[in-house]
Image (cartoon, rainbow, N blue to C red; front, side):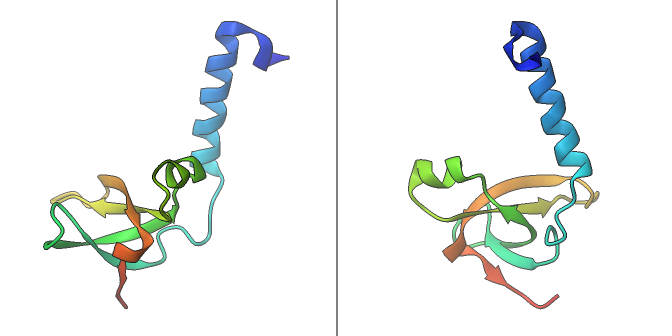
Length: 94
């Protein structure tokens, strides 16, 4: 019923997405440390694999994408969430 009410529909869907993101845990998130090319192809940074990217993003470019959190300095609790081709990710044991 809430999805059919015009204004409530948007607020309800957004709230659902936020709650799902905050409280639904994915046990595989942020378990794998990787090196990814950023900000150019010949420079690498360390990142954490968040999860596979949304299917719509992978389908849009026809590549298998992975979401990677690249922490910023000096505060590593913030960072950039970026999508990389799976073939561009270099797993490291760290």
